[in-house]
Length: 198
Image (cartoon, rainbow, N blue to C red):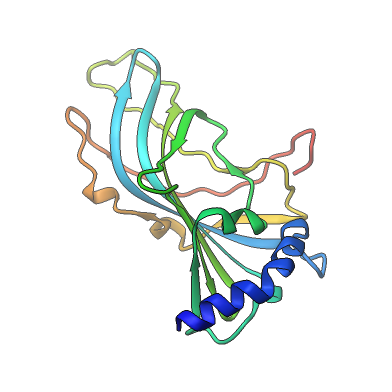
């Protein structure tokens, strides 16, 4: 198995450079599935109107140009080789600050299946804006969101969707918050029109 891993990387690195520059061959939008796994809910600040959480952002898509075998074969890639791939330009518009964890290596990886399916995961901590209505404080209820968008691609290029609807938010029940209770959560998808397109 190690021989296949090394052989594949040596033979196909020039092809990966080409892959980085092209999003779709047939002109169809790429279907990008999103999943969030919560690692921790770190803080909520009523003063700054924000909250901080650590999460794993998992993204899934398929590219037939990267087929190298069957679904049971897979290669896990980390480090600099990831920079050779096209990656989604996913961002969080309500993000105030964030950092990618990098102990002992950058916490991101790609798992490439032989059938062209790609799994891209990263772990980071983000402080997100949450406009709070504090008129009923300390008996208030707040609706804080994690907003996810493509930074530069329109729906003609990439269609972002939740991988499994409401079940795309994982490990929320394991998160503990002193002085707070998570009452409800949901996943919502919608398109918006911006100057750069929809």
